[in-house]
Image (cartoon, rainbow, N blue to C red; front, side, top):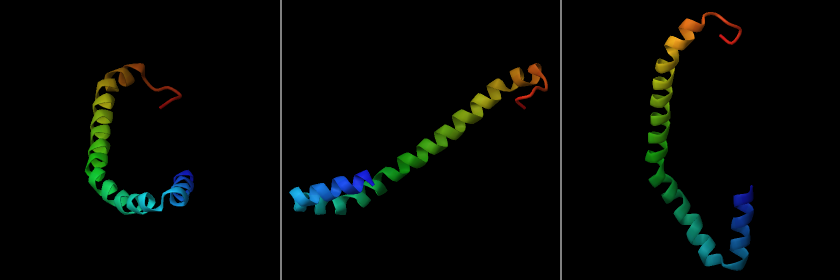
Length: 67
């Protein structure tokens, strides 16, 4: 909502810049999409490595109330 209100404010003060921003925003979103996908994949791999490293400690701790 705040982004929309800021865009409306830009539209009032400088409408050509607001129209350019409206056109370029989807292009920038498409260009950054592979980096978001890569970030999700790296986060998943790091989570898997963390769970594998913590597995012996979880096994040695035994059943508890947090499992």
